[in-house]
Image (cartoon, rainbow, N blue to C red):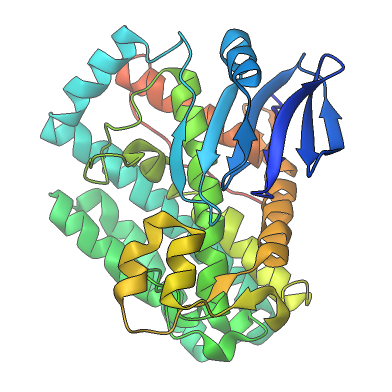
Length: 352
């Protein structure tokens, strides 16, 4: 299930046809050529230009083409003739309006997330033996045990919120440059750690959204998150159990190894925010400090997330899978549950 992906991160780039291949061109110079055969996805950051010839080819070949802002926020994608599966979408709609089924799926997503948050803190604790981390670990264990007892969406969200406070209160203890981190904040990110997490989550959202669409699910119909216009709500559901083991671990690793430093961040002014990414208008209006990754920093995080997703370390049904494969497997499992072919959705088990 490996996916050949082409990522273009320089907004000044152009995607053209050259010698019967897709080529990435910058200021008239071809930087890279990619065979069309086997290419399943193209991801474009910023304002990369595409000719009508390239657009026609991407649609004809059914190559998933995703448009993100420079900061990784989802803009949209090319939609060919393939779309959601009618039988699956009908089952998805029925489950979304059935309070019991919706709550059961939401519980699974939250339980998976808390279990993985606890695993991340356990890894930090091995090297520190910190009393505050130990208290958070005990709290997370209690909270994950209470998830099956949650009798409503609001009660479930309360448990998730308590788990988030326990987790983020100790997350920075295992981080270099962690002294600037005062908890998880994303609109706008006030420090390098939050900026890195937010960008990493944007990348993960796109990967989950791709899996959802590949399977034939409707990306706007969700079970944990409230559906909203222009939001890939089902991808946000699916990524909850993956956030800690993909992005959070990547960010820890990058800071602790010195691969991300202060030189990889910037403090944009309001006008710079709007010029960089039109989706950041709300951030630009706030009189708060803002920290973003610069071009080099974004490239470092993109590469690290890609490498993390490629790691083959998860065993399911006796086979070893990468985290990228796992996303698709989880989306397919969700589809089987919705169609009544499996009884319940199982969150990711032991990883590493």
